[in-house]
Length: 534
Image 1 (spheres, rainbow, N blue to C red):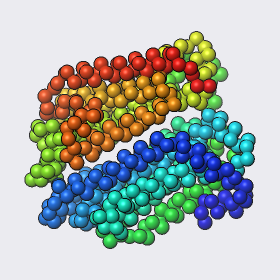
Image 2: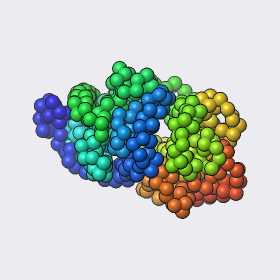
Image 3: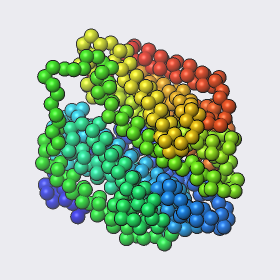
Image 4: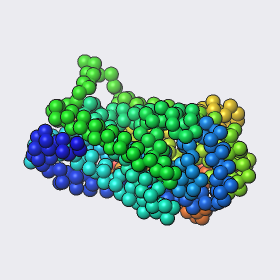
């Protein structure tokens, strides 16, 4: 029984009245978010075959790779097991886990944005007062996520068809299925909480737990057969085995999970009032304890800072633990060595690996800064900024509270990243911390662009996600595709010194710092002069 048929049976077609209009509206609102996230995910997958052909061009090299992965539990935990020596199977192994996680993130963002976000802002109450069915908004949100995942599946299938149409279809459907599992999970959580921020945090925790279960299972078994792996939807994706005698029956697990979770979400949606939740919000104290705009910003964003910080610490420990084994994994493969050198500099392989991984963490930290800066836009468009600014709080003082959390939080998470690498690797503590901190100027340039867009062109503020996605794509895929240096230099990260192991260069660092200051200043000047959204 599908979610839609359940909704129709429980209340007739009137329960879904207006779904088409709400879906078109949701897709229009997400005309930047969905294309950017889907494009980044698709290009990440489609860039792999040519890269892997260059790295492991002969059957002997691919067989040796499988042996190395099978005997290295740490790399299996990070990426997963390899099931076949074909380029298609290696592509599914190399990017399948992370493409699945990215599809899940896209889906949960879309669903929460069009359900709990709408209710928290009060817009859903206005929509519900019209000729709109009780479950139309939830259906439109799930359909919007379905559109995003369907496009992802279509592009991946078409792009990898040259490696084998059956395997390409399996990988495309698997990625879309992971996305829809977490879309329906988000639909349930959105009924349980009154806060969109808490909903996103809880779903992210579920996604993190799924990744950890898969990693623990794969570290214990080299064929994906661990019970822990089978407890995770991400583990189902790898056990679908694209390009390795596909197990089509695994798709039934996804179908069952989506159907059951959708039924639960629809049932919960029909049992509560708009704006309410099943988990009551704890009332605050009778006397307020937030005396400044900065304290309010910290109260609103502290969960995000802690979540990102802990995640980066754990990832740093994992990558640090892999560092000693990278020489054995790369072996005599000169192409793999050159990719690490392009990403991390031409120092020794160990330092190049550390530099490339630290740089990757910096690219991801840019996403945190963009999200934290755009919290200003969310506070303004939801109307929550208005009562704050109606008191003796100026716009710049209000914005400064959030920007301190955004830019200061990036310092904290990069320090925690360095601490994780030190714990996992156990060497070069000072050099690793320096390498993490040198990423900050480039991170702040991306944050400065987000401030500029919000301050000057608030309607286009979400385009900052597109900038961050493009920079992530250049840094992640560019070196593997042997992109020209001119392309790599489009990213502020392309101008940073390659540490540890490389030579420290202060000129580009200072230029990027100055550029970030200019961008933030221009954005705040625009915010001070323009009208606020009402």
